[in-house]
Length: 63
Length: 149
Image 1 (cartoon, rainbow over the protein chains, first blue to last red):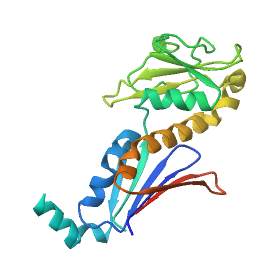
Image 2 (tube, chains in turn cyan, orange):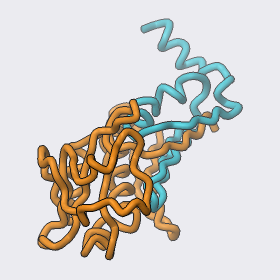
Image 3 (cartoon, helix red, strand yellow):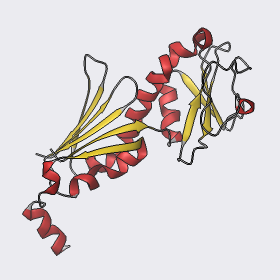
């Protein structure tokens, strides 16, 4: 399952967490949202360095 | 998990700010160049980067509390530190005579609701990609927007 969780605390600070999306696609998924909200400080997790799913690769090469 | 981003909120989107004001009983007066405050900077708080005492009370847009003509107002001012967007300036002396009750201490209530509004607007792109949205508020008062596919 792909999941994006955005938490906005009572002071207006925002945390964006992306789960289950491997590779660069995870950054692409929320890049516009993060830019619209303000100054972002990003921590990449272990999934980021994994290759995208095979289906995703097929779509890219096919498209 | 793929990535986690912490974001220091900046005000970029005037239409989202207007919609937030409508929800909180405020009015965004676009193009109004001065806002109501004490009128004299007492030197007890720092002036934002790029501004001087002479700039206090001047702005690009104003946020007013509807139905309270005595309340101080919020100046929406284009940033002068090289970053895009606006900063919010307001005078919180005596709670801004009703302003703080409407926007929260430190303008936090306004900022939280604005962030939620911008998030919901930008997340339309996620919904278009097949994500479903679920919104909740937890015991700590955090707004949680969860998108899953």
